[in-house]
Image (cartoon, rainbow, N blue to C red):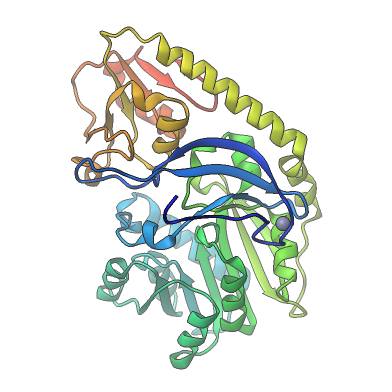
Length: 397
Ligand SMILES: [Zn+2]
């Protein structure tokens, strides 16, 4: 497939990869279009490394295909300003940097997190791959470099800036194909007593909470702390403190420093709680469960009376996997979404029109945004009795 490269070994340690689940190939999950046009489908095979346990996709879609026309900006999502405000507060509390610390945010989007650091007296700079979004950040006075971060980019930043006291990368590392180059860049840019703070999707939470619709091409890696700790160590960095965060259904936040600088935070408990998620038997059980759910939803789809009209609720990136792998795209006629910036677009692959939730009377509403099912049902009591919720297990209400 064009724009897509398959790896044969672990991206972190070069170890052999074993298949966990092969999902139905889909277009890029977030590629909602202004009008229907052919879209390439890419393989979506989830693998695990037999040596270090790192979970990752077998295929890397060329980042340029993903980021050049990126429609998501941080401020669109409600509640994120507050989230980033608390994030900055808690990072500063843990790291306790000197006054006027220099903070670099990698994948800074429109600068929302950096504004929270700026407000607290830090000097800030952002790194953002999408030019249009970098420009938005600059317009609100957040200095922003445009490009893909790595060793060469870090050296370029250092031409004009000092070493960073804090580097943050918020839901970015999972999207980086060459993590070695990325981490070399972090090491280069990080002051000797500096701290690199990352937040990323957490594989144990994905398994525990059945967040399988967070698996998409843009997220190449599904991290756990144990494989990451050995990866950082191979680059002369120590993963110290780790915290599980509720963000996106379950995320890992980690604090990383140069080896030999200051106390090493350890979390022996974490290694134990993570073990199940990295274990081959548990992963095989997850694959069985997904396959059983697929049959169950498949039966539901196959027995839908022809006269019934079914719509989906939720036009987010995760809807794409649900529509393709579970066959839901074949029976839905449109997608409802509360986010007005999605209205008028069509969904990836199935080209289902995205419209505002409305008073038309569909026979069934499949809640693709299942993590928000309770909130959605409470907001639309007029549709009681029509709901189908596909995950964490199929239910009708
Ligand atoms: Zn590995």
